[in-house]
Image (cartoon, rainbow, N blue to C red; front, side, top):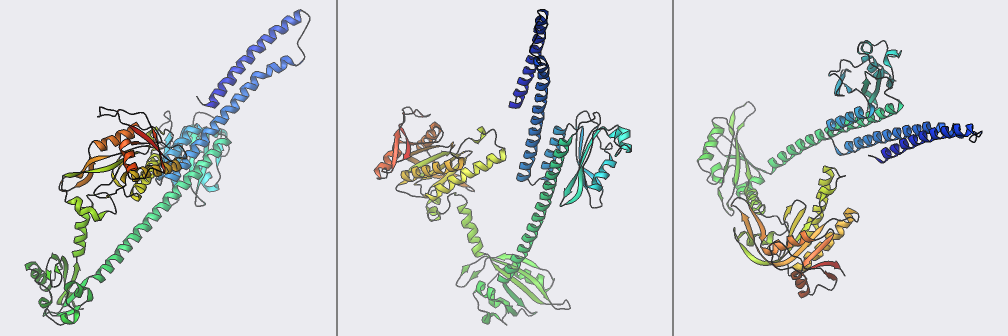
Length: 570
């Protein structure tokens, strides 16, 4: 029960107590009168008013509670508008709230089309209402659309404004409320609600509420229109950009044209760069004297263009002097005169060598996650699907269990998770660490792998954890829920996966222990192992750090307790 509900219940109890007290006073008055006495004048009259006063107070509180409920629903619709570009989601939520908060039997959202006709966009009915919208009063709708003013009637059958409506008479409509929907300053529709069984259902409060929802719905529709306009503009810009890219790509391509004798008549600088033959050595020379051997497919394409008037595309990997083997894409088309006669061929050459090399390099790089560490990738690739043992520091971070946040919407939880994961990724990369993997709320980071050799890896991991503590506190406003575990030890590092797809990772007891430390950490706590502390001390980097010794812990998979410390800045 809500706080207001508790207050109403207390007032009802007070009213009952007042009635009982009044009855007791009346009995006492009768006894006093038998003995010749009486109460002080006005006391009993005052007692008579108390139950009514309590009842009036309860009614005022009920009205306040209903008004708060209505305002909350309006705020939820506002929040939905700000978070969604889906008009259907907003409209359905708004109309559900209208039916729930106004005691309407039926609710309709009607929009005008390009011809000015009103069409039902969305309808909501209570379970005891019949389907269909044939009972909607068109008289009411026409008045509202024409005047741009809302219409409220608490007994339509006796209201002179609408009593002449056939619909009102035929269906016995009682309470009707209709407000205009203004889109960009013009009436473009209406929200219509009614109750066919009860009079006096709607008041000025419901009128104001429905006007507010109409304004919100108009904003949602306008947002959807603007969003679609922006999307259309973006698509047009993308198409124009694609066209421009194609034009510039054509300009950068090699172009060669020949006459009917296969003599070169045009030869641009891009063709010269691709074929390593200067324009002055190519112009007016036979085509085959300039081009390297292309094979039978090239000869067939020339015949198809010269004789069959066909355009052909093919790829070849010829050997070019001073360049070696290259990847070449050719487009060969018939070259026609103004009257349509074929007088030679036009060739467009695209050098795909660098593109192929980049693609091969990217295929290799996609097997590995760490950015900015390409200089060591050859060494990692040589590990194959095996590995090598190496001392590393493993950092496990739990950014916080967002599922415990009951008052946060799923979309907001995802945003919060992404903010925290982005902070972890940024700080780990700044310290030269490697993000091994993301596991739900957890992040596993490695220091001193073959990808990022770091002599002071333990110190770097701890410093990263302390910076993360500052970041989480700033993000969460002092209510940080992270947990961090750090351990330094020997692990096996290498590639796992298959021939087509591989991942670089670390395995071993040291990695497992770092995870167990993170699991045993309390909220907003950074726990390090004794091995990590010793590694930092050996490197002389402990002066500005403070380690608080904790009780040894028993972790899963180990038979003896592990000494752990909580770390702080000194």
